Amino acid sequence: MNSLETRDRELLEFLQQSGGADIAALCDFLGVTRTAVRLRMARLEAAGYVVSETEDPAVAGHSRGRPRLLFRVTAEGIHALGQNYRDLAVVLWQVLTDISDVGLRTELLHRVRDGLVQQFRHRISDRGSLESRVNQLAKEMNSRGFHVQSEQSGELRILRETSCPFPLLAEVDETICEVEREVLEQVLGVEVASLSRCREGQGCCEFQVLGNA
Image (tube, rainbow, N blue to C red):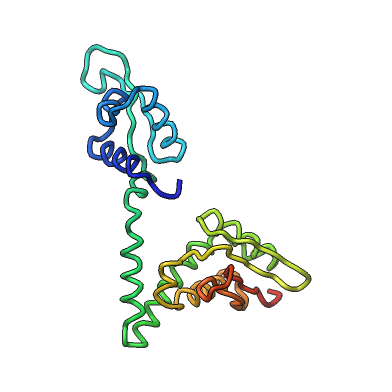
């Protein structure tokens, strides 16, 4: 799931606040049958947002009773609850790009770039061929939620993003596009040129990887 439905969000918030809940408590909260609860929790668990655990009555402080199944929010579920950070990211990017001191603005943008570089560089082998590094980078970017295709025709190597990874930031200005180009350049260790941008109304963002390093 890319985003939480309103009812799913309410359910995760309930689980987070209560520290976990069993089927009976979830039935009361949702006002639905046990079967409906199990189906919903199975979907959320498959998405990685909740985890089920069997609670031992003795550990819970009860001398009698059967073990019960508890559902708790995972770290991924907590992250999903905080996805409104996108608005904050846009505000922070606007503040950053509006800094009038060119030297300070450039330094901060370089820090952002270097942070992104580090996210990818440790997964890319420096020993492989350029073609291998490009393919490794495309694979790593896809695993992080980017939509990237790697193509090679003769000497032409292209990284194509079928959708903009930073659409809200790109709406602020084109700085993020240049930062991304520089990230690709530093990770691959060769010059990278921007061929097209979603921001400019083109169907995809394309980067040409130059050099034979």
